[in-house]
Every structure is written in structure tokens, then in C-alpha cells.
Image (tube, rainbow, N blue to C red):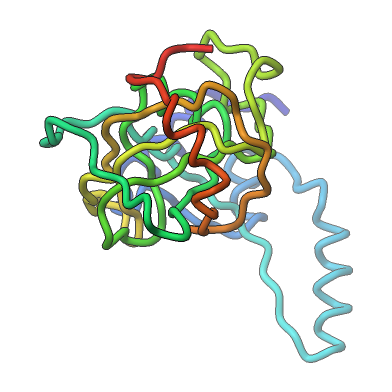
Length: 217
């Protein structure tokens, strides 16, 4: 059966008029709206029956939602005139593992916001670690060769100069970055989740030759 333009328009308008930007409906009701049978109905009934025998209830629903707005890569905020001083007497420096191409864009000065689910309370220098995770979708729209970028390596250092809660997205924070400096040679290193510490001796020589602001590879 042909899906009509009217049916599509009604669904779009329903979602757009919803306060949450999404509508959740039973799977059967969703397909019936378009005059089509749910091809998964028999399997859904079988699963529901088996789970009911174990004392569980299950409902198959369809979530129709507006796509989330893309978060900006660049923001405007006060930036100190000079990079934060490094404590070269410390044993370690803080580091954060960031996927490519975001790590590269930070070092180029083309990304000065890093989004995280925790609020950074201590401002100052932060080592940039390029993680080993590759997500092809991340490279869309960027003139960058994924194979030419470093992975699983410490690639530079940047200053965290502020943190701002993201409006309309509870639990998400934008870390404000400034003064990116690229290491002349990436340092192979295993990252970790969240903030982790790197022995200063590991990056001492690289810190002395870091370039700013973020010259491309």
C-alpha cells in the first residue's frame, strides 16, 4: 500500500508540536497510521509471550524524534593573553583522550569547545591525547585524511580557561579551550576514560618544542 504524503505530514506536525520534540506511540498504532501492517508483529507477540511466562511485560513502541541540534565547535569567551604556566616540578600532567578529528581540530585552533558530561573545576593546562577510536561519520564535512592523523598518542597541550553548562541539555558541559600547542612528534601512549595523569618526563621534551597555534600536519 502506498504511504501518502498526508500521513507523513501529520506525523511530522505531531512531532514538531510536541513539547519534548519527540512522540512515542505503540508500534501497531504507528504502522496503522500509514495503512501498513507491522511485519514484526508475529515475532513481537512471540517475544512478549515468552517474557510473560517469566513474569515480565514488554511493550513495543516507536520513538519519532527531531534530530538533535549539532553542538558548535567554536564559541566566544574571554581568553588570557598568554598560555597558563606549566608546573615543571610536578610529577604528572592532566590529559584527556579525544577522538579524531576533534583532537586535530583543537590543535589547529578550529575547535575551542569540548563537550563532556562532567564539569571541569580546575582550569589550566591539559594534554591532548588522540584516542584510537575511529568513527567515519565524524570526518564528514572536514578536508582531513583519517589515515594521516595520529591515533593512540599524546599530540599536544591546550589550556582549559572556562566551563559552561550547555543550555537545554542537562548534564552536558562545554569546556572552553585556548592556546593549543602541537607536539612536533606525537608520543605513542595509551589513554584512559576521563581525566588521567601522564608522567611529566614523558612529555617534557615535547613541551619544549610545541608549536602554536596548531599548525596543520
